[in-house]
Length: 269
Image 1: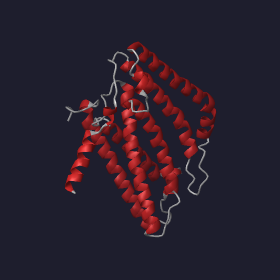
Image 2: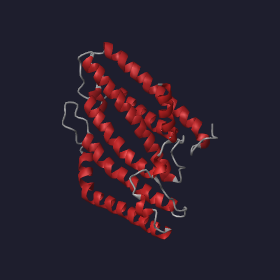
Image 3: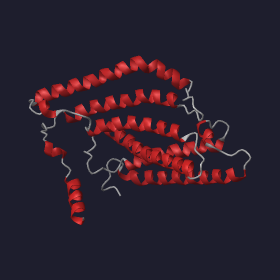
Image 4: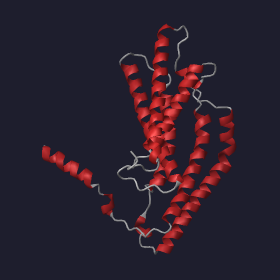
C-alpha cells in the first residue's frame, strides 16, 4: 500500500477509509432524501442545496459531500501520473490535491450536463439549475487548472532564447518571471480585495431563477487561488535553483505512445 505512495505513506489506508465512509454517508442521505420526496409534502430540491438553513438533513448532506470531495482529492493526490514530475515540498502537494479536486469537478460537470440533456430532451422537464451549477463548477476548475499548470511547469514558455542563455542568466530570467507574478498578485489583491470581501460577506448571488452565490464565492476564490499560484511559483524557483540547465527541442513534444496508437489503428484498417 505504501510502496508507491507519493506523500501519504501509511496514512493512505486511513484516508481511503475516510473517503469510503463519506461516500457511504452521502449515498445513504441521498437515498433517504429521494425516498422522502416520494411521500413528503415539502420535498427537498436543488434550491435547498444553496439555502440549507433550517434543514439539518441538507446541511448534513453538504458536510458529508464536502468531506467526500476533500478526502477523495487527498487520496487521489497520492498517486503519481505518468507525465507528472516528482513533487517537492508542501506547496507541490497542495497543488496536486487541488488538481485532483479539479479532476473530480470536471467529471461532475459532465454528469450535470448529462442529467440536463436527458431531463430536457427525454422527459421534457428542463432544470433551472444545471447551467448555473456547471458555470459555478467550471470557474473553480479553471482556477485550479492554473495552479496545477504552475506546479507542473506546463504553462506556456518560449525556450528559443532561454536555452541559449548561460545558467546565471536563466536564473535571472526565472527571478524576473516570479517577480512579475508576485507583482500581478499584489496588484490583483490591491484592486480586488474590497470588492471580493464585500461580495463574500453578503454572499452575492447570480440573479437567476436558481440564484446561486457565484459572485460571492468565485470572487474571493480568485484571490486565494492566485495566492496559491504565486506561492507555487516561488516554490518552483527554489526547487529548480540548483538544477542543471535543461535544453528543449521539437522532439520533446512528440508523444511516442500516441504515435504508436495511431500506427496500430492504421494497421487494423
